[in-house]
Amino acid sequence: MKNTNIYILAIESSCDDTSCSILKNNCVLSNVTSSQAIHEKYGGVVPELASRDHQKNILVTVKAALNQAKINLSDLTAIAVTQGPGLLGSLLVGISFAKSLALSLKLPIITVNHMQGHILAHLIDDEQSLKPAFPFLCLTVSGGHTQLIEVKSPLKYEIIGTTIDDAVGEAFDKAAKILGLPYPGGPLIDKHAQAGDPYRFKFSNAKTEGYNFSFSGIKTSFLYFIQNNQKTNANFIEENLSDICASYQQHLVSTLLAQSVNVIKDRKIIDFAIAGGVSANSLLRKKVQELEQTLLIKTYIPKFEYCTDNAAMIGVVAYYKYLEQDFAPIDFVPVTRMESFN
Ligand code: KG4
Ligand code: ZN
Image 1 (cartoon, rainbow, N blue to C red):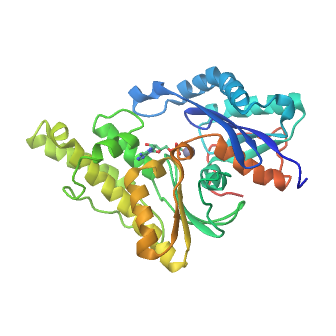
Image 2: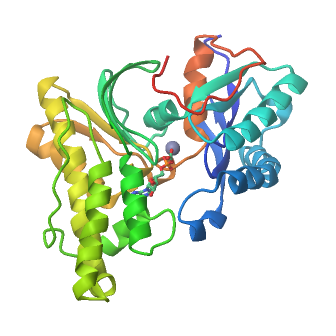
Image 3: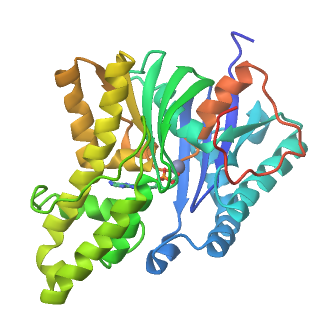
């Protein structure tokens, strides 16, 4: 098997992006994503609308990925698909499609944990980026997760810290909603923060034990902060939007950094990576990179295209599972919540 190339078609449909990627081993030949703008006006993903849009987009996305990679269905070695965590209806679209394809082509099917995908995006074979060495620490930050994970090998993980309530992506998105910004608000808070003063407004941290995080308290105190200020100034948001976004972003990023630094010091970590949608945040990227100088460690920041949901990251996990011949039975089902990686 060593000298044989493995061609994987990977599908990701866990939330509101329909994505398909073709990989030759852990090298990405194509990575095509159809995003759903329909949720913007609702302030969050509407599950029923998301699954309907996946149905509309999946065939064209898969065809586009095959065309861009210049690969025929007959060249494929395996089909990979996100099993969870995610929205049931959304996952079902990708899984049903992947199962049908695997059955008709008589190919093995590989199930992938979406969060593992975010982490292993760092192992995509890309000549421009350096890969972290094992074991490395990964801060995984998305709309549904906030975790500090020690990655011991491609398929072996230890969760060191996790959020006890909301994910940091949710804290970004809920605050954006309070400010009247459309979904997903994280990138917009980031954008408005560029022109703001990050130290003008102060927010206090919720107490957590060990290496865990908590973000539900900050959401509520942000709401009260806005409401109280609006009592004396109806235009408080409009007049201070940049400073509000910059201060709030500074608070969330410093919380993420503080816990990461605790683990890095305690476990004598040398390689530190960030992953998931929130790793696209410009302040987080800058602050993590600064740790190279202050802590004398190596940091790994994903390319923007691999921060948010995409199928290439699902394909790279599948590549490592293929090497272990770790295939799923055809009757596997979606799993909406996945707390561990085993
Ligand atoms: O990984 P992802 O695409 O989907 C999930 O698996 O949840 O992450 C989406 C999250 C959203 O909460 C979105 O607001 C956040 O990532 N996000 C950002 C930025 N870009 C995306 N948050 C802060 N700053 C950004 N630049
Ligand atoms: Zn994700």
